[in-house]
Image 1 (cartoon, rainbow, N blue to C red):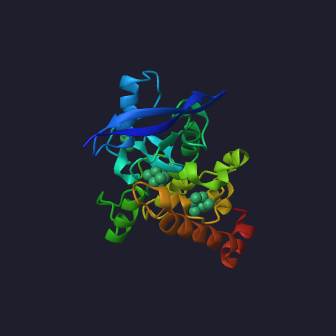
Image 2 (cartoon, rainbow, N blue to C red):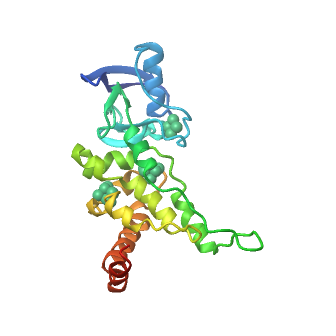
Image 3 (cartoon, helix red, strand yellow):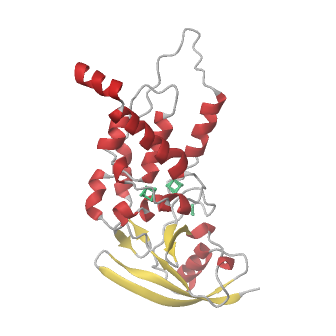
Length: 248
Ligand code: SF4
Ligand code: F3S
Ligand code: FES
């Protein structure tokens, strides 16, 4: 059954903006992105909102809905109490381009700094081999849709723009962990994770894990194991002595 939904949508650009009130007719079963599209179609044709798949797989429609980072295409209107106003604002951690669209290029710059997968040479029979347990461990990390909701919610950069050059963020700690745990990869990313990616700035608040729409256990399965590996490398006396001797 249809009803009128009250919404507040942030409108503006890099110079400033404000919440604008809308009342939009919606249908049972619809999602927040449907309501935004109806506003575009019937009231404000110039409302800017980024989206692509409408299926929770492209990671484009990330916004903050009633203060919580979420995918607009996966947030059902039935999530809210009857009569509750739904407020949609742009991701706070990234600069606004216009309305609900933010400039997430910080994440692409960080992505470029992670060394690519570097497999060891193929064995004589040409067949790479991996244990099934290693295959399965990496699968969870590869579910990432790069929505950057975890990046948006992490307080290390959400409240501290100045930390961005020294902090890669949870999405990329996931990438470091995926590659570091890959048995065929020859790169050692532990020093980079500490010195370049700033994994030490993460104090395990787990907010990233809470907002991940793919349900990836970012903190427990990627960040904490990665921190342990970084500490092993930095403080293991044998490794330390080896680095001294060979000046690595
Ligand atoms: Fe989005 Fe989860 Fe990937 Fe972070 S780890 S970018 S929250 S899918
Ligand atoms: Fe940030 Fe996640 Fe660590 S929210 S502080 S990266 S556990
Ligand atoms: Fe693709 Fe929402 S439109 S994840």
